[in-house]
Amino acid sequence: IYLYHQGIQQSEMCNKYFPQTTNILETKCPHRMAGKCGLGSVYFSKLKNNTKVKEHCGPTNVRWRCHLPLFVPQSSKSYLFVGLAGVNEERISWKEGVPILFDDSFVHSAEHNTDNSTVGDERIVLIVDLWHPSLSDADRTAIGVLYPPGY
Image 1 (tube, rainbow, N blue to C red):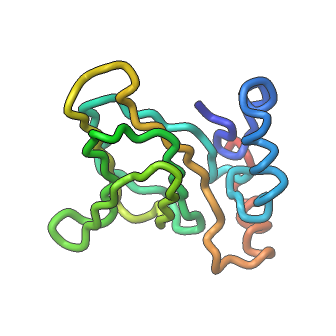
Image 2: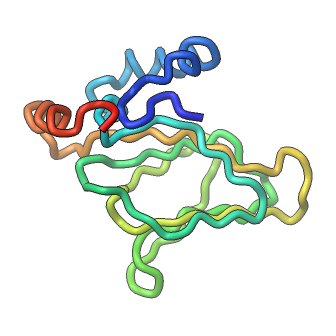
């Protein structure tokens, strides 16, 4: 479920279904959130049981991606893998309420498995794209001009 997709606010989702989440993003971290640039998004990601997301990487290192785990079944084997398999890959377990911040331009993948297959065995994470902390305000503005919302 997208709240911002390629920098464009999904107004119905934000206003009707997630006003508190949107308010927090808009008031507490608007200067950090890359979700308003064409390279950024904010969305809820749900992985069903026995799901693997293939290796992929973001288009640029101007953003970092934050995963905020909202629901992770206790009996799950649920991991984010960042880096090249067999070279520098790091396996990170999602823990409810504990954010994971990583450079989206590095190869990464995900997998979610539980011991049973019951209702509610999904892993749900809020994903927020943030500006790379080394970027200045001028850099962020320039990138926003080069990659406007909807890019």
